[in-house]
Image (cartoon, rainbow, N blue to C red; front, side):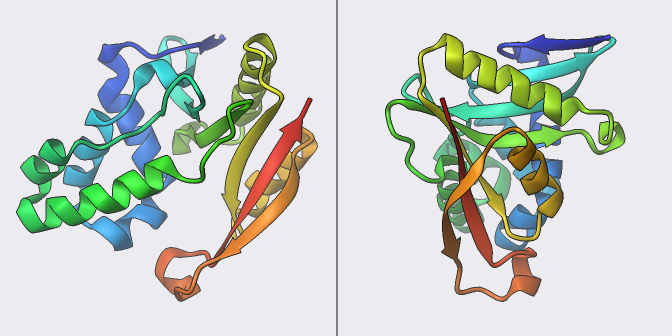
Length: 194
């Protein structure tokens, strides 16, 4: 049975960090390297109160990390980054991961999906749709006027899912990096207004 939880508890921190990291591994790995250490740094920086989780038979299978006037989903501490990645690598990773975690500014009246991630073994079961429903429901309940997210140009499956939920592209940002390095070259900002 699918269960939506509106914040994660501390016992789920490491698992949430693994799901988050795996979903964004292609973006993160060329920038930071050292998968195990990066996953530990990301896990430590998660604000579990700013996550909606989806569980099946008690197992966390996915999450939506949120940014809003209420808080931010992911903020990496410099001390954790240096502890796991060394001084220079940790300083660099801290800057990169906080930039990645913070993303675009979110207007006061919008709820931003900073991350939507489903465990690779559970994809194709509609869990992402359940998470989107839960985020939209939360946005309505909390009085937000819109839900915002970003999706890379090469993630056409996610973009199609968001369009089915009524999201529209409102801006596109291009990056001056080779597409082969990170696997994308543009980010589409999508919004669903109420």
